[in-house]
Length: 136
Image (cartoon, rainbow, N blue to C red; front, side):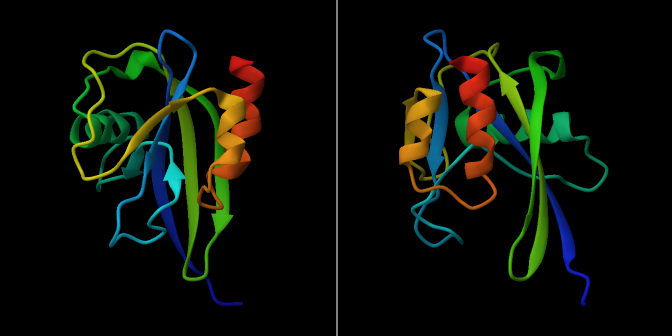
């Protein structure tokens, strides 16, 4: 068995005041284009998961938050064809600004149970039941 590269990314279930979760559609030209995912991204060298998520939320959505506002919920460990993905999922209810699509992605606010109806990457879909349990 050949060892695959381990890729560490962070993801965020951004929750609005109505209890809905923000998801973003991967834009054309990216791998898994057209699938809906939780905002986040790869860690930079020397970056903590929380710092990575704060940076990614600023870059992707134009919002600000702090590490104290990020609550770890669960994680995904998924083997893709060429790499293995490890992705902690944080929940964030406190942030400043209104999320805007800054990287050509479409955004949607949905109830946690409605996430099951979206096409999502294989690593994201198993996270949905944890959000349903948390948010109802």
